[in-house]
Image 1 (tube, rainbow, N blue to C red):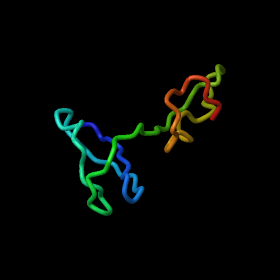
Image 2: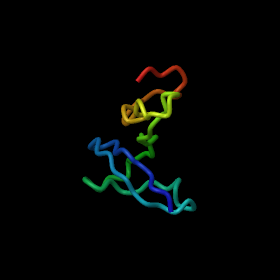
Image 3: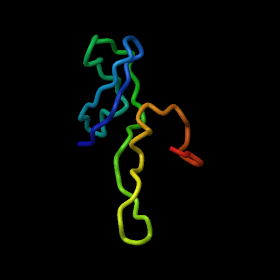
Image 4: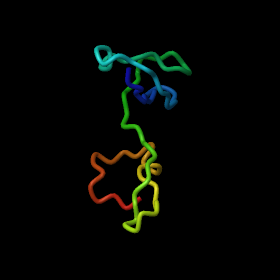
Length: 77
């Protein structure tokens, strides 16, 4: 089962929840206040990108948590 990240529209809490794909479009109750005004958000992730010489260099995605951009194209973070 995948882990999805949600944000509460009432209190602003961001929380993770393991949800089956069949129930992924349902809105879960907020883990903090219990509100059903939640929405699934794009999760950030952490990875490594090779610098070309075989050494790992910069992290990818770690600064994207909470980003509101509709696309990662052209992102400089």
